[in-house]
Amino acid sequence: MNFEIIPLLISLIPAALITFIAFYFFKLHTSNEERRRRYLLHREHQKQSFPIRLQAYERIALFLERISPGKLLTRMAPVAEDKKNYESLLIHTIDQEFEHNLTQQIYVSDECWNTVIAAKNATIGLIRKATMKEDVDSADKMREIILTSIIEKGAPSDAALAAIKAEVSEMF
Image 1 (cartoon, helix red, strand yellow):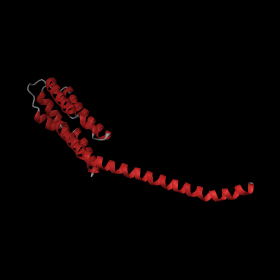
Image 2 (cartoon, helix red, strand yellow):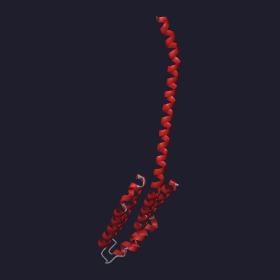
Image 3 (tube, one colour):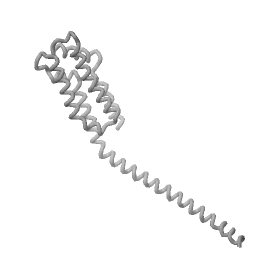
Image 4 (cartoon, helix red, strand yellow):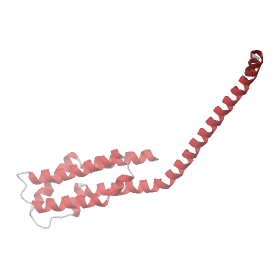
């Protein structure tokens, strides 16, 4: 009886081997099909989201241009000589612009958004630093100090704008 089982086992080895190979190739095929399906779905999603993402970068670029100290000071002239009121007006304007564009962070990278926040905070810091100087006694003097500072060092929003342009160029 033992002698009859051995030929049976020997004849089952090729069948088991073929079954294993068929299972392996079937598994390989289904995983490749799944990856292809995910790739096509991802590509379709990219086609639909690309214009929205590009629009978000455009809005952030516009935000950075609007809070650029040179353009902000040109657009927001002081209504009185009080430097504290003018400082509050400028900071309030920057905060309003930021809140208006807050949702754009969904469509941009974290690094880009952190750069935008840093530019906003640096611009506010520049305004506050100019207000705190002892020789600044009026809103016009404060404007002069801020404009001199950005001529010498550049606007904080310029670096953020350059980072955004670089990120957008990587998208293409």
